[in-house]
Image 1 (cartoon, rainbow, N blue to C red):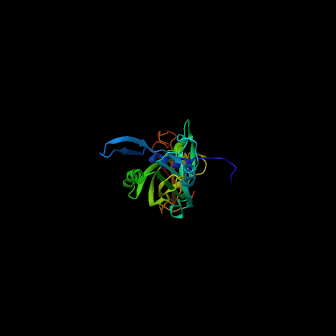
Image 2 (tube, helix red, strand yellow):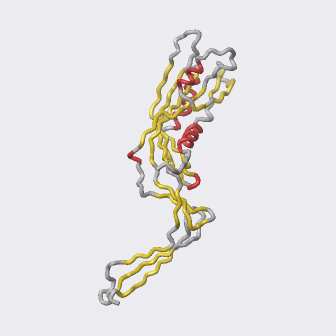
Image 3 (tube, rainbow, N blue to C red):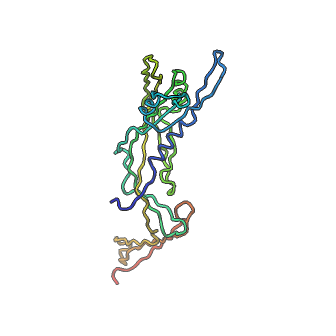
Length: 255
């Protein structure tokens, strides 16, 4: 069952796509007159919220070592098979192997999983946290659709919605002099990942012949044979050029 190793990087690809959505967030600092004094790009990393908060509370010997706010972190929070998105086992994807028009790369139907992401916005003030939040919320109503290259070598792409499911806020600051204040907004998203097996190979069917079992001429008792002949010329897009040649022959069953 597992004798042939394969790795399609499906999870890694979705993590990369999800992170890229939030990779260019900025907050601004203004003076009392509303003049912009500074623009700060918000760092983004793949890490659990608990790990980031633990880093914030670490005792450090210098200000350059301490973790700076604002920043964002995200992680996969759940994975569950989605029976409602099940694809027929008879579904196959094929593509001509470059340099060999008689051979096809073949891929079966994927297993579809519901995947949850948590995005955490961490800031030292409500204003900075809300600046980030209000740049995100208008983009999800409630979903934002991205195009995923599921299997680049097979040119399989899927338009995948990423749905914003909930937003919560947490501020545990109690006013002591040791703990750094961190306002945290947690955004929960849901999406789907399609997991494919490894590539297989198959040959192009060039000739097909079908004999029909019904009389087409009751006086001569002849039957019909339909022959279909394919082509080996690639269309440059993973398939073959049309048309196919059809031949119909008749033969007498009484002979």
